[in-house]
Picture (cartoon, rainbow, N blue to C red):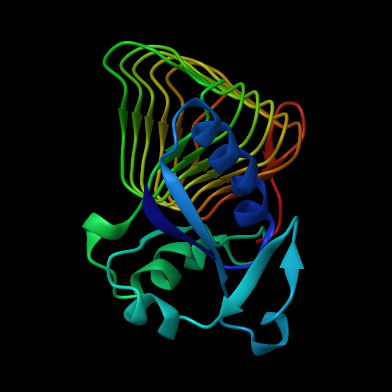
Length: 214
């Protein structure tokens, strides 16, 4: 079993607990040490019996431990890659967790430090870049490319041939039609329906999705 830290003590890491448990139920794989967080006020807290052990200095004191680094909220998602890079970790230490109840189709590629949750379907020839989080019951169809650092909510439907740029945030329940290109750093609101491509750093909502003030 490999030792594993979850960083930071936030929603994505809390949800990762269930993925770790499901993987270990199939075959003992990870020894979960606990959460690591930059905020001292969280240290000593627990969630579902898993402690917040301290700050990022723990990562240096446990050089053999793997790390799943999954920061990101709607208000700071464009800083995800910078936060992860600031940990200074050897890429070999970054864990990718795929829930056993996810469906991974043929010729699918998933990068480092990704969290793929239950019910996710990656159909065929889908490419998921490093540092991505995909929440439950999302379907990403053939030949779609999700670039580094993206957060994709639950029950999202992405049609074939879509390109999603770096550090995008796709809100739960949104729909993306085929062959759309989404510019880097774009926020797609809850339940939005994208029928056309957009440039970088867009903020979109509605059906059909329209730009909002940035």
